[in-house]
Image 1: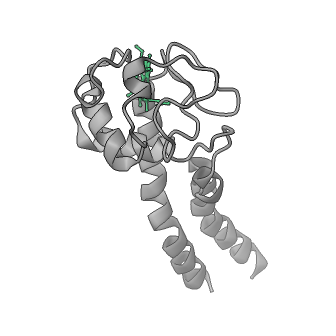
Image 2: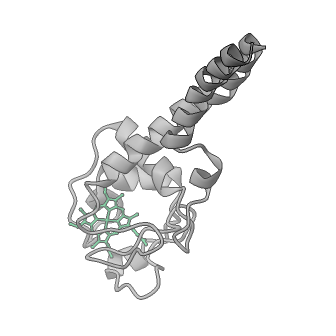
Length: 156
Ligand code: HEC
């Protein structure tokens, strides 16, 4: 019985762990953006627009934010590919953008960051994060077999 519980919980937990790590790393990379951008339910436009729902959105359309002409005329739609290029070197992808940011040189940083951004819906709620286990629930799942084991020992 215990073996079965362990095997089952490992099957569930393993892919979840690597996924959670990517998002966690992405959240860490996002610190570099936080001076100018916010995400989440209370996100406001700062120096740059709120990035809620940015993955899948057209460039330069976030409500109440005054973009540069360059951004509004870019004709871009933000997906993994265009964001990857933009975040590598913003002023190369959108010449004349008023985003003053050198770029993220590491592909892994960009990938994790884009994965993180894609969890925020336009209203600031988190889509995937609600379905994907958080770090806490992953830990709780990992702790469960041990708890079950001591439960079983006491029982017999
Ligand atoms: C120094 C401030 C600053 C930093 C740091 C910064 N940005 Fe920006 N960002 C801006 C500004 C300003 C704009 C608006 C650009 C324009 O209108 O040309 C912008 C625009 C954007 C857009 C386009 C949004 C839209 O609605 O079309 C994306 C995506 C973006 N930033 C992502 C990021 C990410 C991700 C980071 C961190 C790696 C980052 N930015 C770091 C200031 C910043």
